[in-house]
Image 1: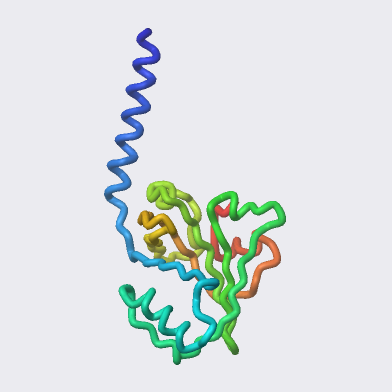
Image 2 (image 1 turned 30 degrees about the horizontal axis):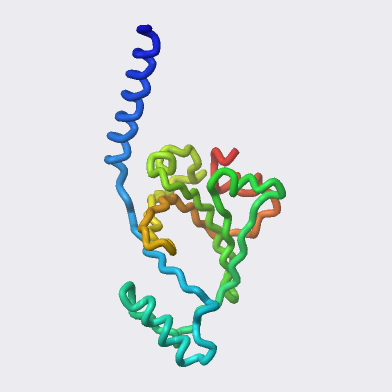
Length: 169
């Protein structure tokens, strides 16, 4: 009879300890995400631009005249190892520039993101971001992330990232 009570106390202590640690993690940024239902946008360009401005107006005034072109590609293994580990690998290539690779760890659990051992191979600081969004139901939620970005060639294998990122296994 005493053993189950002791087990319960250990679990509760562990839970409270994690909660206290999570409160000391500093967020470096908060990214607000607003979704657009493309199928509901008007087909006429001026009306579509106005609809987008109205939807995003509370977040930021946007200037659609500026043209920034980039090719964005997402990569994973055949077995979806990155997705299964709550990660994504993105390559953003702008004309005339080397690709910018970003490995993102995403999780709604701030402590899980902060304690994952993945790190840069060389000493660089990494911040934790809050990807804050409002879903279709109107309920706000945070999806915390750590991003590791660097310039380089698009990798053919996850092992190719080892010169930039350690503990990826």
